[in-house]
Image (cartoon, rainbow, N blue to C red; front, top):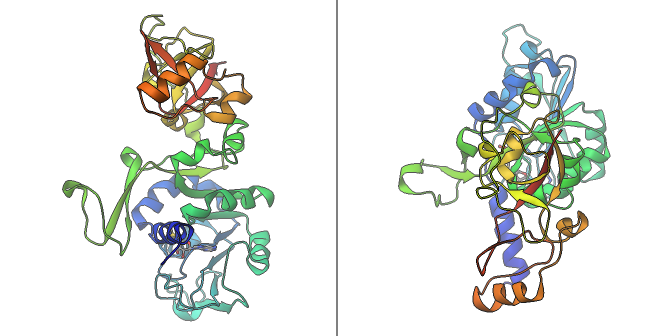
Length: 344
Ligand SMILES: C[S@@+](CC[C@H](N)C(=O)[O-])C[C@H]1O[C@@H](n2cnc3c(N)ncnc32)[C@H](O)[C@@H]1O
């Protein structure tokens, strides 16, 4: 029988096998056109030719003025199949533009190269390709997101990658966001999209598309300059202590919707994680995140013993020190993950 760990890993691996639609890639890339001229683009979690990341950059190679496109795959040697994870070795493709003048990337113009290993993005030979790259663009495996983004930062690469918005609050990722080293790109309509997948879609009937899986909370993470970050949020609401209660364990007001941030409050404000999509660094400073140890590190007080007991015994919920909470009469109210910000 499979161990719990084995099952978890299998589940994580399974969740990694979904593929990005060409329209989603094109929608995001249109905002970065000026960054690609003369650049080497690497897509390093992509089954070579079927990857829409490869398709997009090969087709747009000359329009964008790319220098080179490198696409690597994982445990696969078939350049025309989505990953079967059946080969212990892998290949990578290198495209350097149209040679025969027909304007399309023909198979004979795409160089196929063999890795010694399985194409793991952390392997030495993949890191060698990473060093050659200027901009990395892909949808990496969600289960390895922390390691994946850490490697890009370690090698000082520019990137545009898909991830889940929950990654914002990972202790490995949040400091990058807080320190303006990484931010959110333009994103997906309604914060969700369909990915190509062979696995069963659990989406409600109305959201179902054959051969696709709907994933909500997906975002693009990037460290390339984009106009969106220069556009301050238009705030219309006024501060009202009744409407914006303070937390019991931190001197900040609670705001449930980003657009309700009061225009005239200059102290600490707790906002939902979706605020990051509207974040303009000249308008707000990010102080921290109100979760567990990250919360404690910015001075969020641990639960008062009586509130912790109430939360656990009466409400039968978890009570982790460092999480923000409010009191509504006798009731302990813990809002879903809050980012703490302050107006500049
Ligand atoms: C979410 S899928 C996205 C695939 C492709 N980038 C796309 O968007 O269509 C993640 C891909 O990463 C591959 N992968 C999993 N572990 C990997 C690793 N350690 N190194 C490189 N690729 C990996 C998976 O096989 C899968 O093809």
